[in-house]
Image 1 (cartoon, helix red, strand yellow):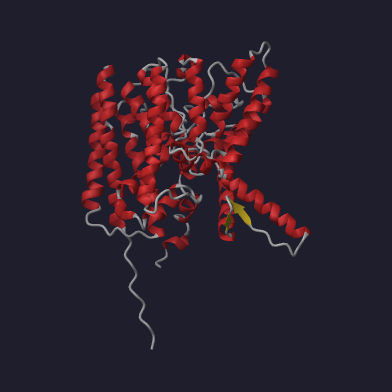
Image 2 (cartoon, rainbow, N blue to C red; image 1 turned 135 degrees about the horizontal axis):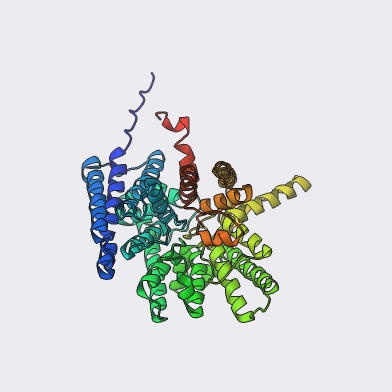
Length: 495
């Protein structure tokens, strides 16, 4: 007797809409701070920002209370792909409204570019600072990268505790497939701790910058841009007004922001042994010190009358900015020497530690690949040898190794495809590859790339170039397999 097949479970559209609506409402509520800043600085943008907040709130109510009414809180892996994709499409879309309503970016593509560069923590900008940019809008611009730094989806998991089972799928998607530590048995509690550490770092940096005598608006924007590794500044020359002590503090926090946020929790709770046992931290610290040494030597050789103290701080700042994928450029720095350029390019491509706010391939994936290749070579020489890939004394399964190899292949494939489209837009081949790598690794500030030798301007790129870079920002920020799965015919088959 044949068994009847159980009816196919309906696609959980309502939960996706509800989660997206919740985030829209959070963004609308957060617009109160930019509106307050606009009123304080009397920049004339308060009505435009308030109108943006109303539009975001209306979209949030539509998604949450009408389209997402009475959802089922169970979510499958297939639905988690959709949830991640829709959140990262819808939230930056409404986040672009303040740029349009204030008239700072008259074209919709420029407003979207600015919004995506913020939420993905890329830091690229098409704004023209030759005209006045309202202070309230600058506050919103910095807030977008701060929300995107730890992740839009993680905010939902922290708030919506009923997602503990299905939230694991979203947690995986937000961290691009790298295995993360669970600090508490309940996933929502783990994510809540991560947010508290993130907020504590931000508040600490902001307090230090204010104590050191920096103006409130630059201190606020730099603090949010540093901890999120976003790279947005309220003006291109903002850091030139910071003292050397302030720049050193910013460099230290850039370095910290590139560390796995779980390890930062152990540091804050006085458990340094947990940090020191982590293999990826050893690699991250060692590579950072090597990068600082390379930059220091190259800066000393290139400068006609070098001052060792200032050169050392400049090298420390450059290494922290590149390895954390923050993208800040040291003030007064001109074209980087060849050795510093090569080191910066490598660290932009690889990026920060897994589980951090930084972008790039991540050092844990590089470690797994290096150990896998080493074991493969040893098996060629000694066929009977049995070796496994281990990180932190934990065996990495073959399935996970294959996933990493596929990830890196897709990552490089998107870089090549993006660079090709950028050459169509008029960029030279070296500039196209540099810009593609920096944007998929979410290191987009133009000053950093120009000092590496690039000859281009985001504002001058045609619409095709900006859409290409937005796609690269999104691919670099969310789970790359989720992005690819949405375009796979097998994904759309009923199962």
